[in-house]
Image (cartoon, rainbow, N blue to C red; front, side, top):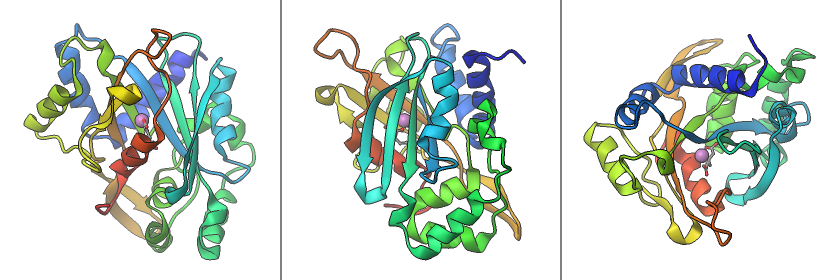
Length: 269
Ligand code: OOG
Ligand code: NI
């Protein structure tokens, strides 16, 4: 396998498709009316802020491929911190990486998360493949449920580990549909379920970014004591507007991102 960012992103896309049952058909729907081309605005990864796996560790593979930090974002109510990374080659997707502030959870949850991290083989996190290696630990349904009671995000990372939790279609690069409202209606007409936390459209031209997303469909996950159907990965859609310098805004909007996180929720928020 050649060792390029393109190969890494392709491998992450294939891994993601397994956990986002809607993504292939949505991709193909847009590809059909856009000469087969669907451009990714960004991908996103999640982690815990413990030293072996924190945001910086997950970012390192991307930094090695030339990505640089573009901005940081705080989500105090979700106990999350995030940064986005972008590449000098504007055709490459941005990478949004968040981390859970584990020290803000209960002692019990902190212990449970530490014992997941302790199961990761010593050298595993050094590999550029770690960022889509999936779940490097065993998990039982009881631990999952206890984490879920405190944080949907904590439970999602425990169940799915390291991989893109979403890819994002760049609406700017679609000739059709060319606006987010038409795109959302088209998806709903085809029966896809969209995230409606705070309304279908997050953001506005005023904040230079509009976003919407599907709700993650349930997928089968193995636990040490059985299997469960739980929400996996989702697909996002983003339209960017020109910033003061005339170029499209390249950042994220914390108030909108806050509502995109609910796309993997097991319960309504
Ligand atoms: C990330 C949510 C935020 C965006 O584009 O603002 C986000 C996540 O769900 O991990 O993707
Ligand atoms: Ni996103």
